[in-house]
Image (cartoon, rainbow, N blue to C red):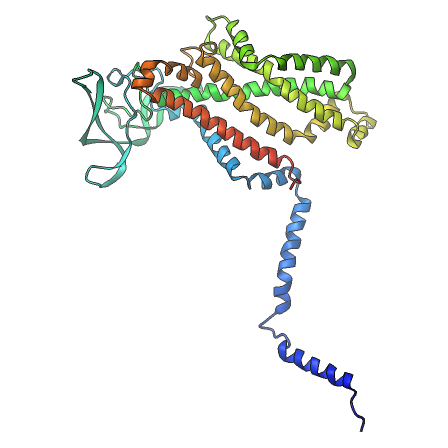
Amino acid sequence: MTTPEPQDIERRNVQTVAEETCPPPTEAMEPLEVLDAEPVVVEKEEERLYVAGQWQLMWWKFRKHKMALVGAVILIVLYFVGAFCEFVAPYNPEAYFIRYKLAPPTPLRIFDITGKLHAPFIYQRERLKDPETLRDIYAENPEIRYPIHFFVKGEPYKLWGLFETDIHLFGLAPGTEDQQVLLLGADRLGRDLFSRLAFGARISLSIGLVGVFLSLVLGIVLGGISGYYGGRIDTVIQRVIEFIRTIPDIPLWMALSAALPADWPVLRMYFGITIILSLIGWTGMARVVRGRFLALRQEDFVLAARLCGSGEFRIIIRHMVPSFLSHIIASLTLSIPGQILGETGLSFIGLGLRAPAISWGVLLQEGQNVRSLAQAPWLLFGPAVAVVVTVFAYNFLGDGLRDAADPYAR
């Protein structure tokens, strides 16, 4: 009988301890499936990223930017109000309510004086005279309630000048013409400020889109020619851009706006202001496009397109511009607030749109006098908040798009 070696004894002891500590797997435990679950999930996630397209990667990165999503929602609501202002506004923006001159905003309530819960309603308001100052004051009668209804019939209108209807988003029931829902108060003529803000959104928000579109066309065409061809053309275009950028924007806006005839109709004045803003705002886009074209004109895909017989225009439009389209979208989004502020500023100082046109700048101009600031601050507060919220929403959206434009950056 042979004596076991010490190494064999040690190996058997280690095997025994391992079997006692880690018993053989049973069918109920299934350790292999549990351990392999995480690598499989990671593998599928990596495969999904590898096969995703550029726009899908941008969307995945954009939705992680919470403030950009909030800004996008706010802008969707604002543009809905501007597009369907006749439906959203409870009254005609030029309708006068003599009993409600400089009336403060109407409080919306859901609890009555007893604390009972109701659907949204307003109390009856009565106009009284302050015996000391002889100013009009508005007192509520808590005994009479007027419920707020949605999709109510009101004054007839034509949506976009095409579809005739009389349905409004909200308002009081028919037969209560002596009471009005003035969410943001009334101006010195008794016109509903909320309705005027809704109609002003159509002009103020659209002028930014139209102006940026014209700036985009000029910027891509002139910036693309400058960066693609170079040489003397590049020199001439760059000197023109530098000359325009050396002049401060506001004085140039004021000088060009003052040159427009004051008796022009609203539509012609609208396009005149839009063209003025576009002629000044295209320089920044042209610089961006020129820089990208200088970097892309020697790339392999551009040379391949040339060898395939593609024309210069097709190479620019079909190959070079789409390669940095995400950057263009981000730049445009950040440029729209400047266009809106430009129109608002020009209208505020009386060189832009004028009454009877309704824009946020025109409404700000009506609320800039001392009487309005002292007696009716809501005339300035309402349009100012609308402009500030829009600019902040665009800036948040632009930040999110700028980050998402390069989805591979960490």
